[in-house]
Image 1: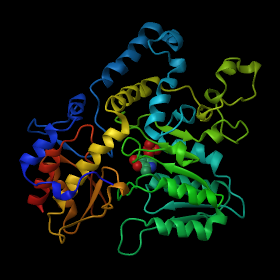
Image 2: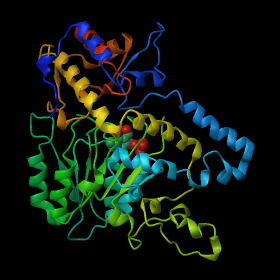
Image 3: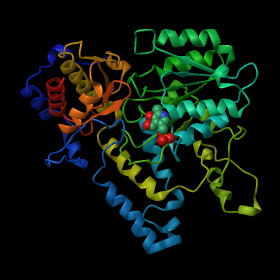
Image 4: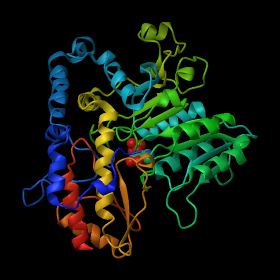
Length: 429
Ligand SMILES: Cc1ncc(COP(=O)(O)O)c(C=O)c1O
């Protein structure tokens, strides 16, 4: 629950400016490059849920790796300022802090969809009796494609083996009780429950702990796609006993386009060398990795690292170090969440002043059922409104057929920007 009440908000500009003055995280905005519009003024950038802004220190950290490559070439593997051989290990602890994991449960590698497939190769082992996957609808298409193709890959029919949890007619969020009913009813046939942490379209934050508990009680494995949750909401993957999770780093983690993604495998699986998995040399015990043809048998590292396939892309990984450092400096997800719930609550308060025939916020109203994103269903001329916002220097995004998503992020967005955005939106309605 939020520690503030909407009636403590005011629609006066002075109020928004005061909020920014009192914001203990306000200095972090200056750590990022903020794109400017044709008038040379900073855009109101509300799409950190799509691509986070570039931290000013990112260039320097990538340059460091380029310099080490130029200077040291192959010796950079061990002699670079941050040796490349163990580079991924520098990401382990901060990544674990962000998702509420133990360090041996996380690894930064690949892209999100690749990680989804790699972990499903281990954790989706359908049988005739138990072949189904339960997911939310609508889900991001890449997840749907990955899941359907996994089902087909194992010789099952997606039309029969895919179960969807949907909002009720006339509603936008999926009720927890409806998810429970599906698990209760089909639990014996479900191999895997694969849900988003935060839904990409509505911004609904699911109760991961409850879903995991109910699903596991029926013998199902649980995987979570944290694309819209990592760096947005506090997570406790280890304590919630989630089996596996994946996330990307280009949204709230600000690590750049196509940034190296993350994966979580619960300790009880991560330390099990007998699980089936698709193997590559970087998942092998580092002690024997370079004995090559002398020891051709795969010996998995007893951690999430054993799902790694290839040697890591250092130039692409470098930005993650900067991003994680910023999160740690800001006090981690607890501090950011405190500002975030207030900032998004303020946006909701301002949007509530618009006549309901014009727009409906389809994101849940309870702060503990959402992250920072609000999805606004625009009843008339939605695309035109989106274009007007763009012309007025506001970056939002549009999801067909009629939804504008806005995600004020606590690291770089201000209360005054939210106030200005709401003013522009209402004028152009
Ligand atoms: C929920 C979700 N799943 C999957 C993806 C695809 O990620 P990637 O292109 O990194 O595989 C995205 C991208 O935005 C997403 O939001």
